[in-house]
Length: 164
Image (tube, rainbow, N blue to C red; front, side, top):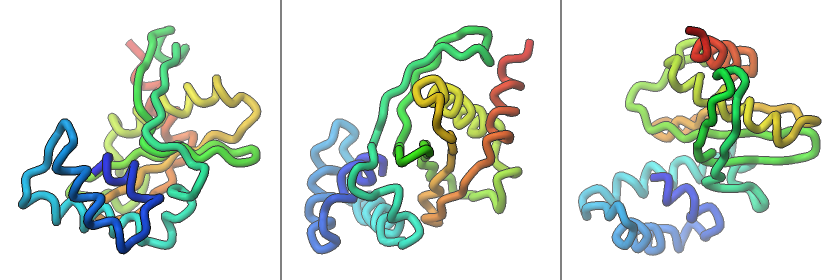
């Protein structure tokens, strides 16, 4: 699914089925034929939703590796990959894709581990973009819904992770 959301945004909707199927059949994690339709349907629902257009717009970044030393974790290094990064003006938005079957109704119901992950991304991005407003969100692929997650919420989860 991540592979499709990385490569299909710049492909016309008419060309997506053929290109998506080829990507899935020839990737290192080769999809089985019966999985291709389900994965394509989910990816296209995400890409076709108007509310998601800005995170897949020209100039946004896909699968961005990030490494940082975080004081919130006692100086430990984190390594991760941000699924989608949108840098514009004074704002940086880090979006993580999640394909959970159960989608929380609001950010307060997001599991702590996911909040910590977003907090780590936010803390790392603040080091890279100190003058920007750092924002985080989860794109729930099953429902194609982009859920912004408050900075205070993700940073509190990260702080809890760093406590003994």
